[in-house]
Image (cartoon, rainbow, N blue to C red):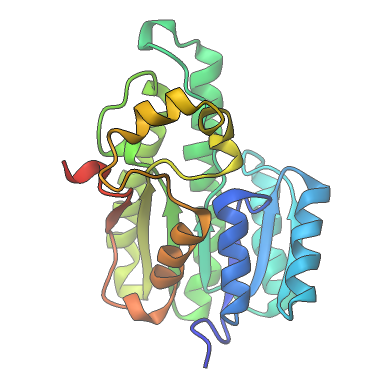
Length: 251
């Protein structure tokens, strides 16, 4: 048996990077996946490729900042596949806003709207269906910026710290109903979001000096941790905030 046979998963921000890798891996492991993202054509391309590889995927274009979209994504999972067992809240912005006194309200509000409020909305829409299904697993994609102070990331870090707090609250509120909730905190991962940094060898070397393993992670490596948390292999884990960062936060 595959690790997610019979499960239905909703993955937000699945047009590229970690979200795309999660969607592909979950489908390979037997889950039916509903994927969301703002870039309609790219989202539909990912869904087609999953289906060509023998998986099941339904694309639902839209933004997690839109309450109607959050509810639609959940309802489409139930309409197409009958239930909802897994939610991966991956949609997020990585804009780094400079020093706190240089950060404009618009940047702060945009990051909050996507990274924290968007996750709250999708989670709020998903929980009733998970309760109907008898339980489930929620995996939030946070960041090491929630665990350590990183200069020039004040607004971003605040949203990820809030996300970890939300993770713990969901975990304790729904543990007895069989819903688990955990956070993944990646360090620097080779994704389109990180491409501008990784294209600069000097800046990359400066950042990698803080990583004992000396390299960025891959989306597929993060996806494997998400798979473990989504599967029954992690049945006694909830409320955990787990770094995956090449040892960066171990120092």
